[in-house]
Image (cartoon, rainbow, N blue to C red; front, side):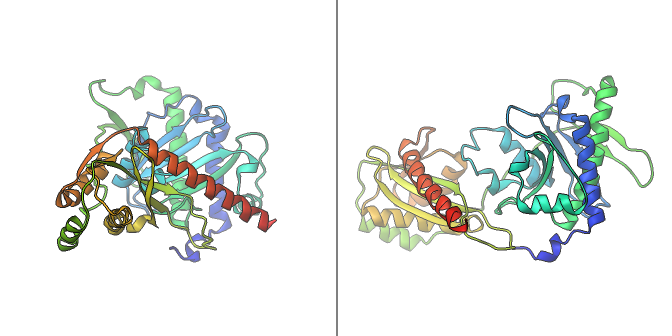
Length: 357
């Protein structure tokens, strides 16, 4: 959780942030900037030492245009995952991994009360569709939230440089051609003290991703579990999903909540639903498996998951139980269970909204 002092933004600095956003909206830079035109900016004096990787968001239908900046190696990895649709098969899965700052231009109805108060406090006025700036901070394991003071200062500088970079690409396109098309390149912007900004092409390489450390388990507990329950010729689907956090955190940043589900692949019988905070994922996966086995009173022949990272984590534990594991894209039993759960969550959410009214 984060203290409220971090979010006490002086009005003059808040106005500078919105001024930087206004420049990008007035020029509609996303009209000629491709989302794949990733660029990096070094801002060592901004208070955030990590390298920022920027990507413009085009306007597709009702989707808001804007710009994202991914921070450091963690952010660059989350960008790579966002580009891989098969990894983000969950509506909220990006919240688990992302380290980024977002500026999107929303409709008025999509703003929160805090967004509207911030705009009013600095005397800004907007009108029309997709013209209202909205800023969000994404931290791994937390729900999207307002920007902290250090993030406001960083993002203001980044947006200013992103604006000039987009104009440079528009007016001098020939000067911004990558060295060749054999590799993937990224244009890097950097400035030393009061000297002019300089661009240079760098080969884009993604840091090796490490999801979660290997899971700890009690070998004696697994041995007893194997002895206590017989194996049946069944396959179980096992998956982890990110769910909406309906808990009221007040002024504190709410955490991301995940749910481990286990279901019979053939009958869709639900063996277990195990909810935990994202930050506790490494500690809770093994208890979730054990609880499902104890509920079912037998061992399956094989677990089926959709994510190879998850399979790698679980394989050493399941090997001790004499149970196999494989990957598949069609987890129909889990999808059915998940949809049923989301329906209950939606009904709960609507009931709470009605109580507030």
